[in-house]
Amino acid sequence: MDLKAATWMVRSLDQPVSMVHLTDDQDVFAGGWDGRLTHWAEDGTHRWTAQTNDRISAIALNEHLVVVASGLHVVALDRLTGEQRWSMALEGSADDLVWWQGDIVAVSSVYDIEHNDFIESAVWRMTEDGNLSWVERMDERPWVLVQTEGRLLAGLGRPRCGHLDISGPPPFTHTKPPTSSPTTSGASGRSQGLFGQTDGTVVSHTGDVLSTEEGAVEHVTCMVKGYVATTDEGLAVGRTETGEVCWSSDGASVSAQTEAMEHEGASLLWLARDSGLGSTVNVWATNQGGKIADGDFAKVRSMHGTSKRVAIGCEDGHVHVWDREMLYRRLNSEEPAPSEQVDERASALQAKLRALRQS
View 1 (tube, rainbow, N blue to C red):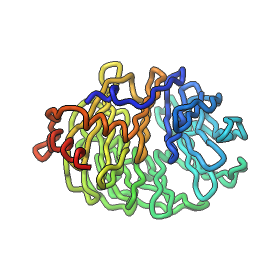
View 2 (view 1 turned 90 degrees about the vertical axis):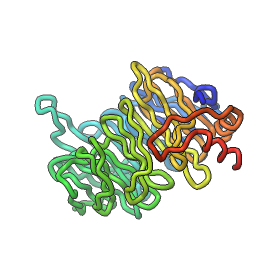
View 3 (view 1 turned 180 degrees about the horizontal axis):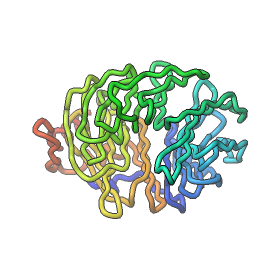
View 4 (view 1 turned 135 degrees about the vertical axis):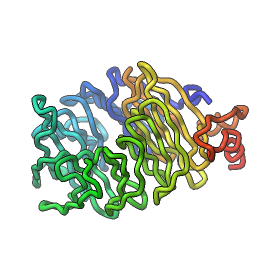
């Protein structure tokens, strides 16, 4: 099925999209490469647009505020109006941030062009009012923030690698990696946190190696059952929670992937592969092993999914949103067609469509 035929909403940010975020209420927030932030309501109505300092690399919300990593700054805006409440400059680029225990935890890094490497990074904790509680500087870059078992963990690059428990103030507890490779990706799952490393290993938050992929792990996505790891060579591998292979798919490099639209105890994997100047978005029914839909779009830079919807942000400024009810109606209305095979154990699209019709 062509995904474009099943799109529920398309909106324009009027600049390349760098980040999209769906709330539990299905509101859409989109941030751009030039710092624009726009909020659309659950029904697609435009709520507000605000301008921040620079490219938006992360979005986090609580009941009152939308907080974004914008260039060198952390910027807080009123969730209802988009009015800026406060801004704090970090040392280096603001890479990521999350709400944690009522506060904001952000990570920053300084990149040195001459050394072609990150020379200093920091973890910052600030209150909802924008007051700095503490900052901890370090040599390693925290590449990813993972929440699991009531803890907030930061996956590290060289020299220490592994991950830090940054749930509270420093000094932080360091978990050494099972190999000497740096962490470059991660995911917060329902039962465990995952870290992907440059040597192909996927490590749990307890330090156990779950799998070793053929290439550096660039993306890890936790599914309802298991996880999907994608390498820098474009190999996507679906595995159980303990690491056993369920399916695999090879192709062009992957720019983004997300879990969305839970169905019959499983969920769909949305995966964007580079395709010339654009991207091909593939939707996989991971519990069935078959691809159920795809579509060609401008280059995809960000994805975010919930149990009901999924949103993608593209380089041409468009934000595409799919709704679960509409997507499944379209799937049920089409004639079955052969599915792309994932591996020898993959199911065909016909099996998936039959399962959908029985739901």
